[in-house]
Length: 93
Image (spheres, helix red, strand yellow):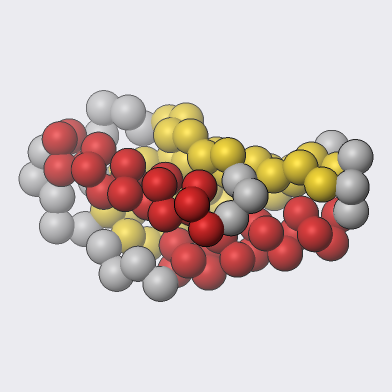
C-alpha cells in the first residue's frame, strides 16, 4: 500500500474577507473530492484571507496511480483562475 500526499500553499485573488476565502476553498475542496479519489483539508493559514495551505492525500496499491491522481489534482488547481499554487511538498509512505 502506498500513501501519497502533497502539502501546498495557495494565493487567493479577489477576496476581501475570511468568509470569501472559505467560499473559494470549499469550492476547490469539493471539486477535488468529486473528481478524484482524494482527501483534502485546509491545514494552515486559517486566519489569513489571501493565503491557504491545503493537504491532499490519496492511497493506492501502486505509487504510479497515487502520483497520477495527485498530478491530476494539481492540474485542476492550476486551471482555477482565482487561485495560484506557490509552495508544494510531496511525501510518500
